[in-house]
Image 1: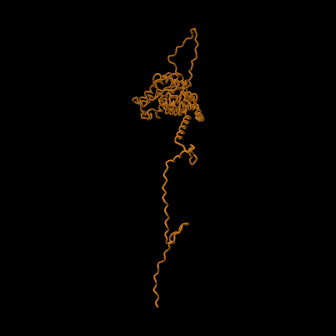
Image 2 (image 1 turned 120 degrees about the vertical axis):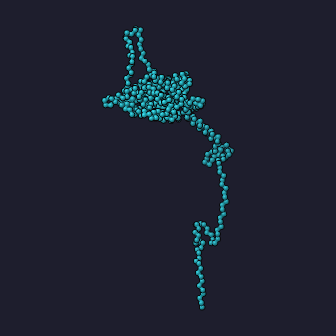
Image 3 (image 1 turned 135 degrees about the vertical axis):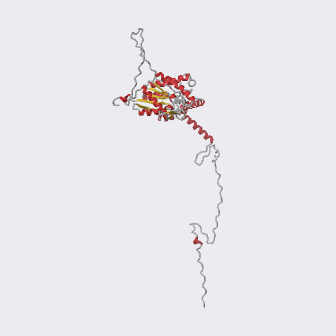
Amino acid sequence: MSSPPELPKLPPVPESAEQVLPPAPAGEPVAERGVAPEPEPEPEPVAPAPARESEPVPPQRRDGRRPRTEDGRRYGTAGHALVVAVLALVFGSLLLAPGMHKAAFNGQPGTKRDVALALTAGLDHVSHALLLDRPRKLVQDAMGREDADEINVAIVAPPATTEPATTTSSKPSTTPVKKPSAKPRPPARIAFSPKKKMRIWVAGDSLVITPGYAIVRAAGASPAIASVGGVDGHVATGLTRPDVFNWFEEIATKVKELKPNVVVLNFGGNDNHGYMTGLPPGVSIGDFAGTSWSKEYLRRVRIVMDTINRAGATVVWIGLPIVSSPTVTEGFDKINAIVVKEAKRRGPQKAIYIDTYTMFAGDNGGFTEYLEDAKGDPIKVRTGDGTHFDTAGGDMIAREVLRQLNKVYDLTSWRHKPGA
């Protein structure tokens, strides 16, 4: 009997779906084999809430009181906010009234200043009556600025010196009268040395700052000169507006405190206008450089020089320079004429005038930013604003100041003494 034929080999059984698919996460139902899970229904889309620009204010309650917010605050209205803002503004103005009144007083003359003065004067009066100016005053006192809000326009002249009275007799004098010598001897020059240095103080408006620092540098290089007080320069000040800065008080205080032998000044750059504060009672002035204006300005120049001379110091007054504006230059020239007149009346022992008008004029007699040095090279002596001095210009003025002081004082003989 023959054997049955050999059957063909079947392919291996593939892995089941359960073995191929990864195990389901815990807690998820497993679908029966061969049955697809029913898809879950998609959630219905929810329409987004409309954006609220501002939360509406709920209507007022029946008892008249406005409802509260979630955090317990009551709703307010725009009218309430406006009232609060106005009250805060008025209260702040009363606290700052003294400073506001001084700022208005220091403003440029005109309608704007007049209106500001009228408004701030009333606020200042109410603030003082309600004692609301006290906190500001206490803070200023603690900072050492107790007079910051004071409007000081007093121009106090130094006491006049009186000559000793001479006795008169009815009998003719038998003492022969000596005829004055034809050529009086010049006064002896006061000598300074490293042991007894000349003390120099520099003060004035912005035009004095650059030359002033050049003088301070020169003083540091000279064994016989010492700078005291540095450079006391205040921008936009002068002799016509003591309400802005009272130079008459400042100079009187500093000459007593610093005891200088020489005071270098520059004023006038901000005085070329027909307006002055601190006028004597009943005195009024006309236009700039007019008769009444010039008389009052001369009086102020005289007070400054008297204050310095009676303190035992010499005044060195740096004149106003030629500037790029012909109109301003003309005004500066008129101020210079007043100062020159008073300086010449005193003599070089008491007042020295430095003529920067011609010193900085160009070849054609007009304004120039550049001048030639000793080698003939051009150097920049004026700044781009057409008014102030550049560093080289300040050095030129410092050299001229020292040259003039060498004529009045002895600054070099100490070099020739033994042990010098």
